[in-house]
Structure formats: C-alpha cells, structure tokens
Image 1 (cartoon, rainbow, N blue to C red):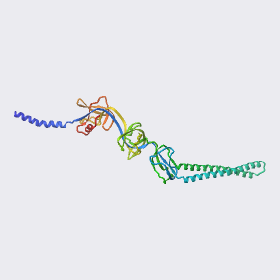
Image 2: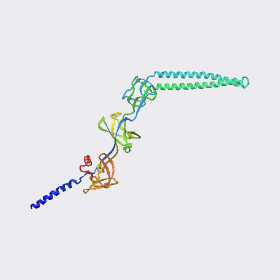
Image 3: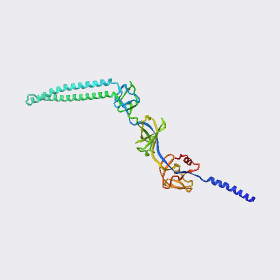
Image 4: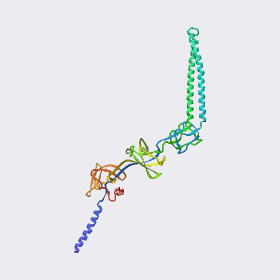
Length: 379
C-alpha cells in the first residue's frame, strides 16, 4: 500500500507542474456581442463665428472727422449718416468749379459773337469775290478768320465740359464727406474718433464695419484634405462654444470652398456653416468646436473597432477582404463583412452570416485591444 501511495505522489509531482504550465500557456480570447446601435461618423474642426454679411464702410475723400453719430452696437438703417468729414476745403473746390463753369460759358459767348460776325463777313466776301469786287487774298483772310472762330467756339465748349466735370467731381467729393451706411445692420467696429484725419490717397480707409444681420451667423472652419472628401453641402453640424460649455448648438454646411490653404505643408479647405442666432448668444469672433456629421446609420449591426483588426495568434493566412472572427459552437470562424459608418469605438458591419447577439473576437485576454473593447459603453 505504501508503494502505491509513493507512486501516486511521484506521478502528481511530475504531472501537476506539466498541467499547470500547459494551462498557463494556453491563449485565452476575449469576445464581445454584436449589437445594434446608431453610428454617427463625424469630422471635427475648429472655426470662428462670423456675421454672414459684413460691410466695411470707408471714406473716398481725405479730411478731418468733424462729427461721429454712431458707436459700437448702434443699430443703423441704409442711408443713415454715420460720420461727417469737415467740408471747408470741399466747399471751396465746389465754388471754384462753379466759377470755372461761368467763366467758360462767358468765353463761349464771346467767341460765339466773334464767330457770328466773321461768318457774315466771310459770306459777304464770297459774294463780292464772285463779282470780282474783292481780291482772292481778302477772301482767304475772311475764311481763315471764320475757321479760327469755329475752333475757338469748339475750344470754349470743351472748356465748359471740362469745368462741368470738375464741378461734378467737387460735388461728388462734397457728398462723400457724409459717411452713410450702405445697409441696414449693426455697427460692430468703429475705427475713428472725432478730430482724427483720414487719408484716402492710396486706399480707402475703413471707418466702420456694419454687420447686415446678426440673427443669422456663420462658422468659418478649416478641414484637412484627408477629411474634406467626406464633407458636402447640407450636412448637419453640432458645435460647442467655450462661453456656453453645457450647450450644444446645431447648424448646416452651406459651402465647401475649393480654394486650398497651405501652412507648414498642411493643406486645408474652408467650410462655411450656417447657424441660427435668434437668441443672440453668438457673438462675432467666438471660437466654435465643430463636429460635421458626415454619416449617420441608425439601428445597424456594429462591432467594436478592435474586432476588425483581430486575428488568431497562430493564424498566418492573408485575406483580401475585411472580416471578423465570430464564435461558432465555441470555436472561432472568420466571416467576410462589408463595413459602413464608423466612429471612435464601433463600426457598422454588413453581412448575411451574422446576427445580433453573435459573439465576435476582439483580442486576447489582457491585451490593450480587449480592454478597450470592454470599456466601450453598451447601449
């Protein structure tokens, strides 16, 4: 009996470590159920809140600002006077232009009178010359005087036109001293103060910026070239503002501009998003954290993203199509699938060979992929 006990103990001493090491080295896989859920695929970007239409109001003439009639946030109407430039010099130019017109008209009247006289003389000499009563030289002199008078009259008429043009310019400059709003809106920027001199010699200085309608705003955001192909006009957008951390606002993509911007070899495209501002919460210049919804699939079969990267440890086979490994009677089986919308955690799968509740392999026990898949919240 003792011999039998000794033999059993020896066998246990030999077999127990072997069985332990065999179980220790056995790979354990982690599975997750295939579930139906809503997948929302987004493109994230950052942009700036801007009015849909702003107008820079400038001055076409130089001079000192004598009066300002509006301030920041002033509501203005089209044609309303915003500021007045001192008119002293422009009034003098206008009076000078009027004097030049009168002088040119007087010169024309004088030249016309001379022309009338010399025209009669020329006609009389032609009749006398036909009857041989005057010499050819006298006729030529009369003709020369007549044609010279015609030129003087034409020059006087041109002087009147020139003086009239100067008057029109002076009159326009006088009108331009009144800085008026070209649209209905609100003043969002004021760049001048009374007594300041504006110079419009080389370019039109901006005096005010008027936003036409702040009830409708837009977000100008930059989207990378890697994502721009997913963005189209009409897509829904969710965005948040630092000033309202607990609120989520909505909008729509209204324009995808074709002109690229390149900075540090990074190519981006400007995307314009229309947003509503009926409540007046949005202010020009606010930073918006934008999520453009490029795809949304509701109540579709999904698997954790790790499932699409999983393969058996000892499997060396290469596959042309994407697939997942599912548990069939406790054993792994690879199924080819088509993929649809995807977010940071889940991907939509399309296949007739799987159904809701099937177990899909996501990784080995203790691996990062398996831990991440297990941390994904269930619906």
